[in-house]
Length: 353
Ligand SMILES: Cc1cc2nc3c(=O)[nH]c(=O)nc-3n(C[C@H](O)[C@H](O)[C@H](O)COP(=O)(O)O)c2cc1C
Image (cartoon, rainbow, N blue to C red; front, side):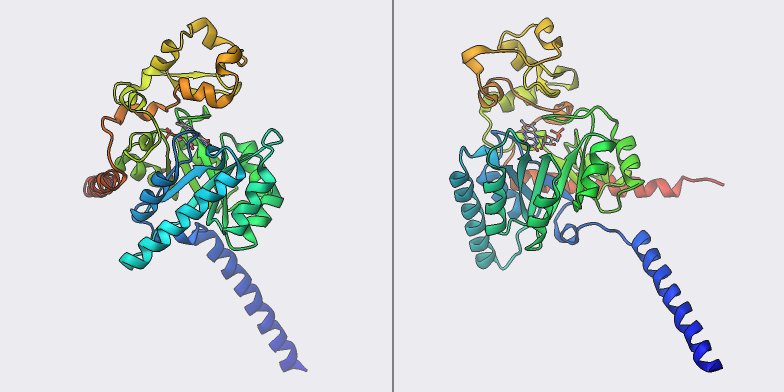
């Protein structure tokens, strides 16, 4: 009796030990997505409306970073499926030819009642087992469950804590923190604060977005506590992006002060190249408006507006060239390595007793 009791206590205490150990492991071990360690750099080429197509995605994946595109860059779900097939086929063929493993690719889906394609596009992601789905606006558990059903991952895009908490409740695998100065619909919060605040309650993958333009910036994002860097504007200036040459030239010729944050174009705050706003004849008064400008027939759709008025983040300040993706990734790797090495040298001097 005594020994059974003792055994029970032993069992109980070893169970408690195991539980505590598990908790400890969960807290100390990173919850980051497993694929990250297989990448050549901890980076994602972010999805960009009218900019990212299959060529950009394929080149990124071949070079070991995640390539992504918005489903809405194709006018229909049928067109979207064609791109999925093209990307999968070309990457598979490349893997067979080279014996190398391509990085996973991702698709951005706007989960909002104004997007009538959500259901059809999510079904296509399930059918083609898209490795990474990036949701924006709505973080819906149904979408998360559908993508998890085949082992896919869902990262959700947020600009503030409240949205991050909702997405965490929906079970997303990663949060993309869109900080101040980012291209597209940017946030206003400083990246250091945003990462620190979200990390207090979210211990899965943290992806930082906003003005990450070179390898040193990627290293800085890791230093702040992110697992992955999410780079948009830098990838507009690649040979494979769908942006016209004049757009790429304007990015090379712009500094941080040549980017305007306004609600007037989409009804939601976003960053645009000031020179493209001026070229479209928009005045400071127009841009200060707190609601979307009625452009009339000329720019009656979001696509027409974004074709004429070019979005980019403050990261334009450190973009001075347009490169093929392969060369850009090589450059980013060199810059990343030297930034980390340079920083490690600080340990020879700091901290002092
Ligand atoms: C021209 C442009 C179009 C964008 N379109 C989308 C989009 O369709 N869906 C999306 O989730 N994010 C979109 N973004 C945001 C990017 O995915 C990313 O969050 C942002 O570009 C990161 O900041 P950075 O440009 O400073 O690197 C867009 C950004 C730009 C510059």
